Image (cartoon, one colour):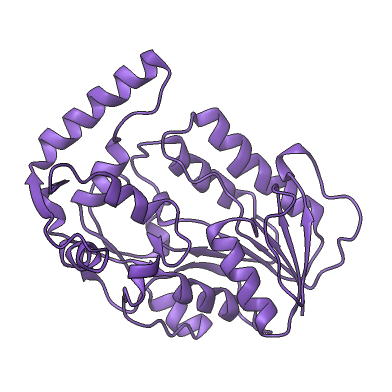
Length: 304
């Protein structure tokens, strides 16, 4: 297949583009960085999709739209401009028989627990512009031949967001987390996300919206302890903070940061993500796409 991958200069997009090129698809990666991605058997083109439609070659069998602003501290208007309006531009730039859009489990209720949520349960309280914009982006696909994938907490080699953020919160040998993150969560390894994309690209794969993630939910605190140990930080202890106290503190930090026009040290979204159950029902992806995810694994995390 001839496949376009947006966001190829990023963590997820680069991994998807590389995996597809390795499997001998004809891949063209797109990104804002002029030198953002390379592969010996693929091409890379610079394109800021927020600036306007793609010019030139647009003849592809499929598009995998990975590009997004993943930042819950971003102003709502900026998140909407990139994630919703940018997605609209990408859709209009390609006339294809297959469009795979990488959305997010952030479209589910941000405040309450998500317990084995199904695809029909999107909505509820949104605690940031990122969540709102990813939900709005999904609405742009009405009337198109699409597959929408909703991963949660993507991790793996090259991650410059999730794992560095966790490790950056360590203070004096302690990692303070709401409820000590003693909660069940669905995580998504980069290889499992790539598997889901490949399933969505198969001829005849049914369109629709699909949760994707690792094979089974895990206890988040146990995964974080293993991560700390693998990163040579086994001495760090996880310190539980009551959810209400952590949420109140994050609310105050967000307000202060808004007045000072700077990024808050933590957010209500982050507190709710680390302190509430976040598990996804993967039945639809398993049964309709043939998705066969592997268990959560931190193998190789020492080098991430």
